[in-house]
Length: 265
Length: 264
Image (cartoon, rainbow over all chains, first blue to last red; front, side, top):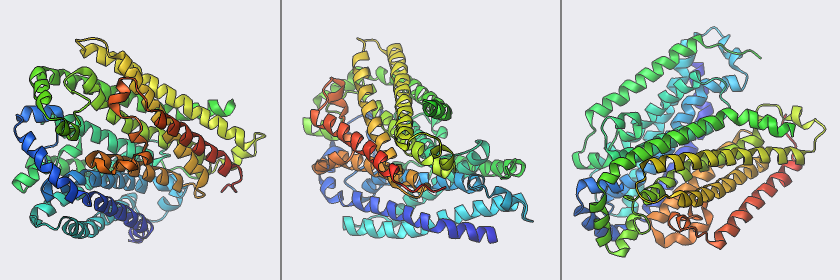
């Protein structure tokens, strides 16, 4: 419990900065909505005539930028990137920071099981992610409402935004695993940025190929925002894949952490 | 010279991983092209019929993704992104890591001026960037040639790679400059990453809404528009900006780091 509280206290300010950054980014993009939505009507008209194969081949986006939710989804990709980097960074650093700061021997020599340490740390990261969602979603709703001045389906808006959390939990689990697998992590942020952007580029490639099997390779493909707008829900198989991977990565991380050799100063 | 060698060895592992990732990415991307080329003539015709304004909004005004050169150009956007991350993190880490790893006192009590240490570190960065670009260049040429059925596009690839190198030099200089300025060693990487993300998002915003393109001077991602660069035209203004920004930030690294009270 002490570890959990200490971790929360240490990492809360950073989380707030990241959330603020996401909201500012959103505001910046949403301010362009009134200007773009007019042009977007024309684009939508034109692309509608393209056969679906061509749209895919050209990598055109299937979102209708003239509608609030379509435009929000387009912008939301950037929010997803930032959120994913934050989640991966938190996941990696929580299990590796002590070794870097040379406090690992101090912590693991306390009369607390290693599983408890790992669980408390992981739980703290997850708590902060959930808190971030709770802060971000209502404020994003306000920003969207104010900048667009239009009505949109709140339920679908929520469905879009919750993909952030589902994606972040994946990256937390991946981060925990990377933290115990990679020996001597020096630059957490370099690893986080590289990994997130590499997976995102795979998603960009995957969009054109539209190969359902390849889509399992990158979490960014699990939640198709255009599909959510159309159907109002997630695709069950990818949601299951997301959850299974989260549990597997986290469990594996805990297992390895227990057996990890902790350097003493 | 010892420091250069030491830095090269220290960065060898990460450089190798980056190079392998780039080769894989190019390989996968070009396999994808093979699939796209099948849809060929029909798509090109369709694009040809579009009015200019719409082509420009869709980003198809200068590139036809169904030709291998056009496809490679679209693909190249991602190289700039990944290359940028590599460079900015490399530049920021190489200066700030001594303080973070508590090896600053060890290094800076050696009978070597700080100026020379920085020069050595920046030279190591340049070597890393050159290797990264050479590997990307060779892998691009190799995989493009494998799937290319028309005339060779090596010239275009070389031009684009030159742009990638310039972009990386800017970002590496920015990274180094930031870590020279920032006092808290842990923060340098965060600031560099934040700046990088802001520049990337700004570039995306300009793409989405071209009327704000007066902001393009603020983001290096806009300095080398892929279409013209592929034809071998670099805008002189942006070349000057590239050199100026790189020199200013590299200079800042020397100035700020020279006088700093190092945390040990």
